Length: 387
Length: 167
Image (tube, rainbow over all chains, first blue to last red; front, top):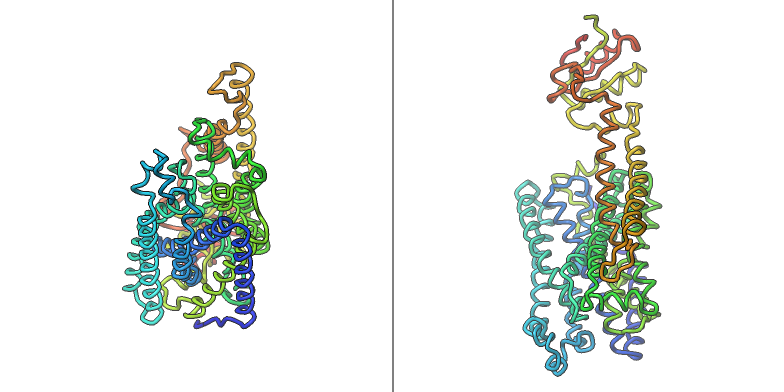
């Protein structure tokens, strides 16, 4: 079963148009308010790096657990992880906007602020850049190693590479949990530099994994519609939804833990984060829409066996969840940087542009190798999967 | 003892499943199937659907109402206390207790329901039809009164039962 996909001309043109829309939206945002432009860049950078890193984590977990059901789809998360080098470039651009995004990057403000002075050994611009470079160096390195081995498996086969891949996947899981935690602290939590929450990073880490699983399922479903993955059956769909269902519970659990403890303890240093988000004009809706979309919707819709294994239901739920992740990051990033609730062509257009870039890169990486890991030891198990 | 059951013992899932399918085809009624692990095809096609999930859902539904009512009664009606200016009916803080108690109620009540339906309680000894059924063997049980034992026996032998006994 050798099959290679070829990107159609319409696909490439559509993604290019999306990218042009994104650039236009960004230009518009920068002409109005540079801070809004940088906030948009930060939001989408984090969004799509979450998908890429989350997808590689997904693939790694499949390898470590010797999962048979997902073996045939393993190229999809790998292709999504191919966005990591592009994301690295986009993040390096953010160095120029750090002054607009993070008020701890203004040295004179830090000097007048005892709390920020205390945090300065960690939160300072050079160290922030160094950390960013280290995260991406590690992620891209692990991506290249895993991808190379995975393609080599196609040519050589055998258990030797399979075992090697399992080991590299363990290393990647270990690396990504630590680096992603710090990355979320650096990129998002430090926007509100006076506030901190110990569960913040793990909540975002789970959100990344959650939405990577969603996008993987979406890509598989759309490609199946075009005739790829002919072996996709109800059991695969059930397992994909189980992943989404399980991660939505973990995410909702962390969200509630963070919120409930801060709400109950009522300490002014901690509640400052939630007050503008719950009481602020315009933010209130997004705050509750966040938990409603990302937790309640998949929890209710993907629990019954009938809906969890239904392609139509999944095709409706997944786009809503893709917007859900946007809302999750929007409510975390925008109140701290822009202040007022703004949502217009600038935000939506930038997201569309990034989505186009992501689609182009993922599609290109996917077309560079055979669609199925033909010599994966569990491929037959995947094709005959039944649960 | 008069033998009431015919037991077909298989050592492989595949052979047991082919016997199972053939017996379904020939409409030989199967009393029960003992397997060392859940076999999906048996669960789906055996013709008996477990209703324990519905019962579990109902227990959860009523337990949620019960626990929330209990918390409301203690914290709001009977003995309101002022914790740091929070309203007495502090719903988010009730949720954790509700989740824990609902899980506890569902688990315990489902266990009791299952034990009651399966006649499992202390001092009630259930017969073990074949020692292999508690080990690694697959056993298909046919009630001789409800099905044609001779045909069942031939089907089981045909498909590769390692032994067919009457008990």
